[in-house]
Length: 353
Image 1: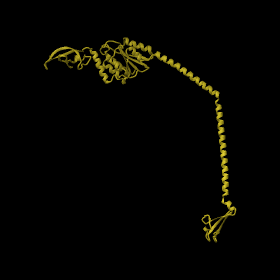
Image 2: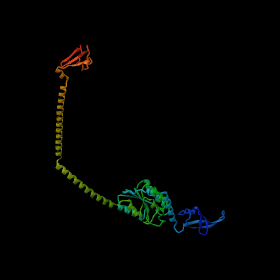
Image 3: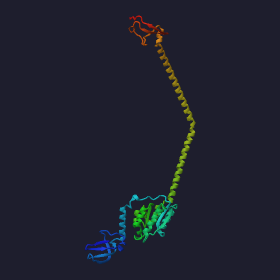
């Protein structure tokens, strides 16, 4: 890294080679106040003095704190802390995976709380390095192994309290990305209640301590049994009331004798049939009377009745009725219809008047 150091009184060019820069826990930025240690020498090609930096720390705050803030800012920009990526913690896990040190207070607290609180859940431990060189890689490998084997419903990832240096494995990018990529929900449990790490922001749920993480991972057996007992009493009371109501309804039905309803309905049907038959008879009688009256009128108007009294009906060859002497001509053939037959006649003379 090639750097220009400035203060109120001057400017000094500086360079930090990879051997020294790789040891930095933070990334120097423009405007940052730093303390730089090294040796001054002349850069012959440029003919100027410059500082060859061996060590550099932020001025006023620790380099780890600066690195923490930088990592938090960068990952937050990428969306690793976004709530829409948070997965829900299963309500009744069958197996709880734990990524922490194999010894120490953290793993003992987790096991004790889960065993006491919800003994139905299995506990699988991945013994990880949680401090020093390789710790971040070890924690990330444990998370990835649980996901590969799909052998846990929820993961508790963490360790007991300590300094920022002790907790640093949970501030590194490798750990953060392994937590974010986990398909199994992750509960972070790093340090004490006041300690915050990058893992806390990325995890699906943050617990202030390992013991609290164990409580959040599983339900309370005592609360579940109490809930079941309360609901059992409620169900029994409900069934008792339901049975009693059904018994009362059955007693009412027995007292009423449902066969009586059928007898009443049968009688109503018989009455309806009789009424219908009487109505039909009355209609038929009325229609017969009307038919007789119409037949009598028709019979009185019949031409045969008139002819029986001595009248006849004259028609021409076309069958048309002859109503006037003016319709007749001498020599015309006509037919006379009588009450008991007909006569074919010839007109000799048509006389009017």
